[in-house]
Length: 71
Image (cartoon, rainbow, N blue to C red; front, side, top):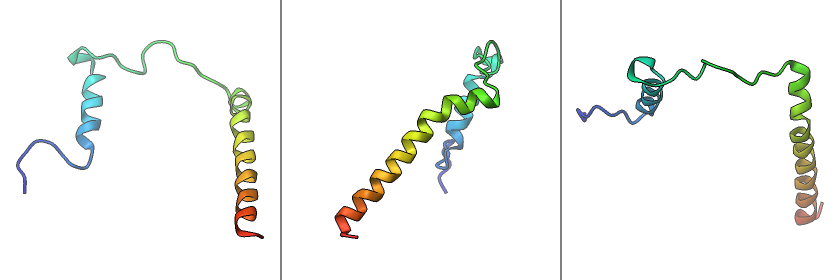
């Protein structure tokens, strides 16, 4: 087995991110300071355009499949 200190599973990348946010090493916590928070109703209103776009995309895909396959 390779004795290097890096890991091929991606955990080393997560460790690097955690180290950057470690206040002892000069990083900043992503949970400090102001945050954008939405309540459930605001979240639904903000997501509505994406939901509608997804529905339109699904219907266009279904139509394209019917045209291509002659159904």
